[in-house]
Image (cartoon, rainbow over the protein chains, first blue to last red):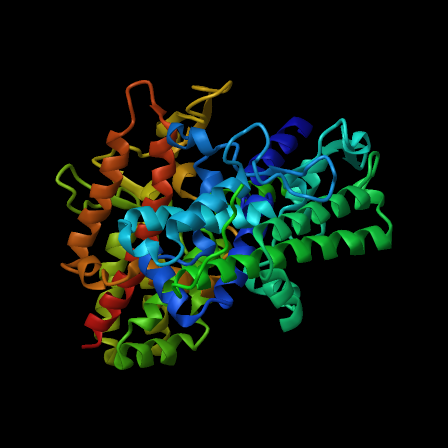
Amino acid sequence: MKRLLIIAIAFAVAGNNHTAKAWANLAHGTTAYIAEQHLTPEAKEKCHYYLHHSLAYYASWMDAWRQAEAFRKVNNNHSGRAMDDGVNYNMKSGTIPGRVMGHLINALAELGDGKYKELPDSVVRQRLINMAHYVGDMHCPCHVGFSKEAFPQYAYTHITKKGKKLSFHGYWDGSLQHQGRGKWYYERLAAEIDRISPEQAAAWQSGTLEEWGRDIVKLGHRARQITPEGTDVAKMSKEQKAASRQLTNDAIAMGAYRMAYILNTIFSDKNIKTYKE
Amino acid sequence: MKRVYLLLICALAVLTASAWTKECDQAAIILATEHLTPAAKSLVEQHLGTSYKDDIKYLYALEKAGKAKHTADIHLLHLDKRLKPKKAKKGNDAYASICNAMKVVKAHASHTPQEVTAALRTVICSMCDMHILSNIRIDNIAHSKHDFEYYFVTSEYGKSKGSTKKMLWSKTWDGFNYPRGFSPAFRAYDMKLCLHNRYAEFTKGSLEDWAADCGKVATYYLDMMKPDRTVDYTDHKLRTEANYDMLIKASCRLAALLNEAVK
């Protein structure tokens, strides 16, 4: 009887696979959803023209397809690294060429300054799909790595949940879920997250790509300070929980406002941010 | 007591694994509403109220309450080899249910409000049901969802290249809720963007043609099944797009059918 009960529960759980599992799904979608709310009418129309979907629909597309042979070369482009000074973002993308920041730099160079008009629609579409994902990924607090030599305290960050092993990456990738927001719709998440003052939004959107990178490194530091080695997620203090929630919100909002800024700039034919080595 | 829990859990599993998610169905209805003529909209609102998107689980609710004879066939679409609708073995299938219900909707003035309400709810549920590819039975093939157990390649390169995951044909299509986090209203908005200017294309022809179209799509994916029943990663992923299109088709065709009925 017990065995039957276990089988039945397993069957029921397998059938109920509707919950959001990771940053890859819910946080990416929310980032793109908020970004779309801040697009200019012109940029929104152009995005819809190329995508035939909302930005949020394609926010996790790069994750969904990353195991396909055609996307092999960009499978490691979902994260980036901090420099050993712990302040700057590695714009050269470390040992793997074209990591997430590199990809953004290339896409901006390809589409910016009105160049998107000279490209086939399918190419622009694919670049937009990539950006809808990568800009969110760049801002995920666990998607910025630190070298073991410079930051030994960040190495092997193992955290647990009720005694079970949960990686640092696993916690922050699924932070919305761990914070009890895993079944929320984008609208509800956006209502909670998108309370950004115009001054804050302008500060996030201004500056060079290097400065954006420095902000991302700060997100990485904050995540490691909130959940240091040995953290049990189930036993986090009120302050830790609040800080975790705030960091997730900031990361999503920062990514969203920057995504909106990038798309608004591309489709307004204004000069785009560039990075030159 | 344990036995009761067991039955409840099994029932839950069957219900959740036998259709698109409620959110998807509701999105289809929201989008359909946008395409209704004023006359059709008025008839629907008169009998179902303004929150009729919740009526999508009407057939399931009836079955659950024991008010309808449970036959799995009511959710299915039976087609013959030429993709023509075929009589189901146990009672009506989705196509026959729609045909019967539409007779009532067309002659709504001569029926009681309760009959019209039931007919409208049946049309809504069955139109979605016949567009769910795992609900399609062609020439008695795929009579059981367990007929089509297959393996799909989970990775095309790297260390896990060629490794496979066991799947059921029904699981490929059921419980569809991609991308997660879409509310019904936002999904309807996204579906509208995806529909673009294809409404006329999707609603061309009769109910019979639409059933054949559903069969054609199902055949395409069934044919993709190799003898050893291994589907590659790319093909498997492409099915998400196909499922989204079926959801949009169901929505457009529901609107077209109701518009036609009250012309």
